[in-house]
Length: 239
Length: 256
Image 1: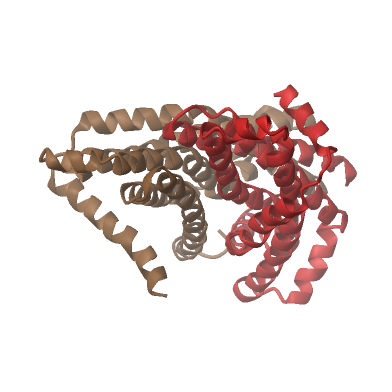
Image 2 (image 1 turned 45 degrees about the vertical axis):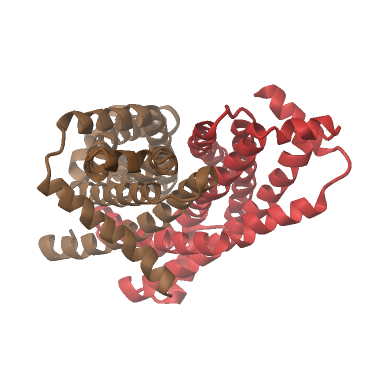
């Protein structure tokens, strides 16, 4: 595993940089995932608002802090994690099955024969595309999420938008946005690395591809949640 | 538009077929138990780990807030209640859909494209009865076990973190849990878990059972399963939360 990582790192600086492949992957990860992600994240935001209002009422007897609290949860955790898990199930599964199929149909060996470093050819464009797309998608997801939360808090809980915004100011600083982007970049790096790793290790046969896909999705989900915890803990020193 | 409607409708029809088979024909208990065992056993480590981390994350985030109000004592109850009502079922569903859903649809899809399902039909057995219903029941029943496990782990994770880093004693963390976690929340968590498992079981068996186009088709079925399950689960989550909130307001009244 460590060897794999170091190889990827050295492959990052090899020439030629395959810009077209990178652009294609960026389109696949970014543009094509955007609708699904926005849709899901919006619903998740609505649920967050409802739940936090329920809990606030229980503890402090009023839910005037809900907007800020929900905004904080969305920015710090929800937007990033939900986006990352969705990307895992969509992009990660796709990459693992793609690379796995390449491996068992000996395309990876063919690349090696041609003197092309398969890591540089396959993994690096995907890795960079996922990091870039991760950051961008998380920004979009967070903005959409906050907007949805604002609408729901107005329609369902009766907080006007101005109150939502001012309460947001109390709870959330702009640095939270940067932290979310850092999270996005880290999650975006995890997904293709893990998926391609399992893809390269794929065994023969159609079942092998299925198994590689499943393993990749599970491993990246766990890694994402673990990384999220570590990052959250690190960021908690900055407040 | 028609395509969308058929995409939504076909799994529902399939579900009704499954339910018909479930109530009309004899289902072998042995097969169901096997499925429950395999699902639960396969997802045990992932669920446990994910639960632990989620508990820890919830603890960190709530602790930051509670410090401001000086209500750190509530930390355990709040984190647990939130996990039970919201994060727990969602997380179990995501983990299950990544592992079990993908596995089931791949397995059934492989059976379909290698014509094993047709073989079962030729031998005069009902593939729904032999293959689908046991898997369906297995996923739904084991999801409740996994929910319990994930919840325990999340309480552990939260208490561990709170005692190590926040300075809330484990005993204090645990003391408020019964006070804040209400029966209504528990019921809601169970309803959510059941409905997510139902969605997952329906979609992954449907996609696998009707996979076409060789090995590529199986791959496609797996990816489609993952994506559509996610979407449906998030929508169902919103729906159950909304309905649950209204129900709680009706039953317990405002300010509950």
